[in-house]
Image 1 (cartoon, one colour):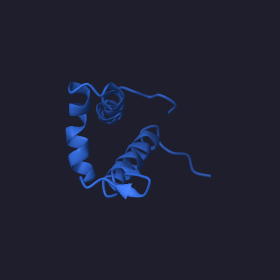
Image 2: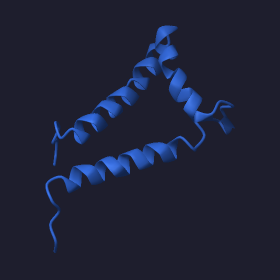
Image 3: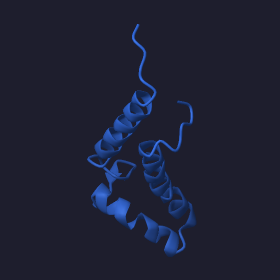
Image 4: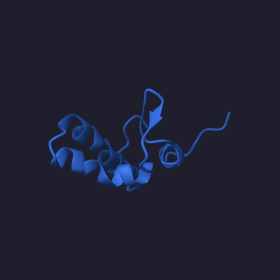
Length: 85
């Protein structure tokens, strides 16, 4: 069995992660009891921080996973974070 180079595994994880994130942006953003949101997911991503600003702290805090994901991608690209690799 061939082994991966030290840089191949983090890059593969990064590629799959970005691909899945983009795929998620094509799906319905929120559906509750069969009723789906009328806003596109990309707009919901862009306006997510406003939930925190207007006082809906539970949704606002959850939105901060998006910038943390972006930071993780940047650190993997810069080879500054090795995590479980």
